[in-house]
Amino acid sequence: MKISKVIELINGKILIGNIDDSINYAFSSDLMSDVLAFVNEDTALLTGLVNNQVIRTAEMLDLGTIIFVRGKIPSEEVVDLAKEREMTLLTTNFTMFEASGVLYKNGIEALRISYE
Image (cartoon, rainbow, N blue to C red; front, side, top):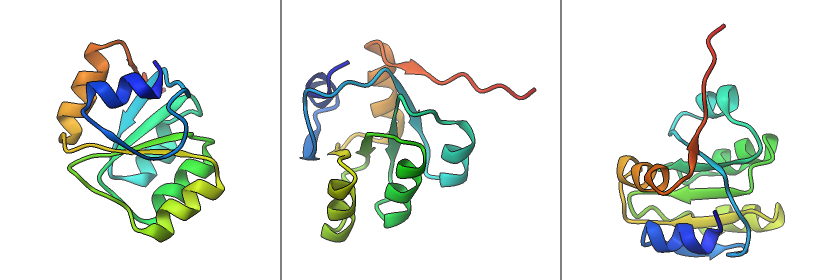
């Protein structure tokens, strides 16, 4: 799904990035340890955390899109760090649950976690 469609669905706003980029999967978490354990590079991260650690975690996993929920807006320092890494940052006033549900309902796939 194109970022432009994601923005429309979650009534979001782009902070930086390219609205022509696409995502296929999403993962919602405020625990970066869970993100590191379960996420792959073809995934958008939904989170309420707005610190540098979110960008560093996304960078380690080659994530290109971060969606900040609950109206959170990262500092200029965080935005600049993401810009250097050519990431797309969005924000929405939706809760994490609502944003996740809307994206899932409209075709964004959930990651399947294996506990083997």
